[in-house]
Image (cartoon, rainbow, N blue to C red):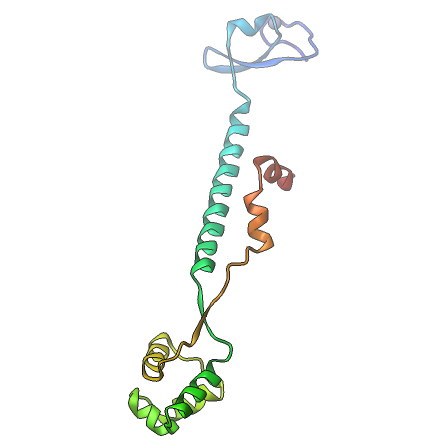
Length: 160
Ligand SMILES: [Zn+2]
C-alpha cells in the first residue's frame, strides 16, 4: 500500500481525513489528518442489533405478561354447563331464556360445537354460579428463555 501523502510504501495505511477528503496514509502522516472512524459502520450495526434486542425483549416481555394473566376457557366447559344446568333442574330452553339466548346456543355449547364469547361465558357463569375458565400457569417457552440469555455477541454470530 502506498501512503497518499508522502508516497511511501507501507504494509498498513490508515484512513484519515485531510482537509475534508479521505486519504490512505502511513503512520507518519497520520498526524496531518483526522483519523476516520472506520467503526462508524460497526456502530451502526451495533445500534441495529440493540434495536433488535429491544424489539425481541418487548415481544417476549408482553407475551409473558399475557401468559401470566391468561384465563382460558376450561377444557370441560361443556360438561360444566350441562352439569350446572341439570343441578339447577333447568332444561336447555329454560337456561337459554334466563340468559336471553336461543336454545340452540345452549345445545351447541353443551356439545362443544361452540365456544362461548366472553359475554356469553359471564352470563352463564353468573346464572349457573359456576366458573368456566381456568387459570393457565405460565410456562416459559424455550424461545423466550433463549431471548433472555441472548447477548449482542450471540446476535452478531447469528448474523454471520
Ligand atoms: Zn506518509
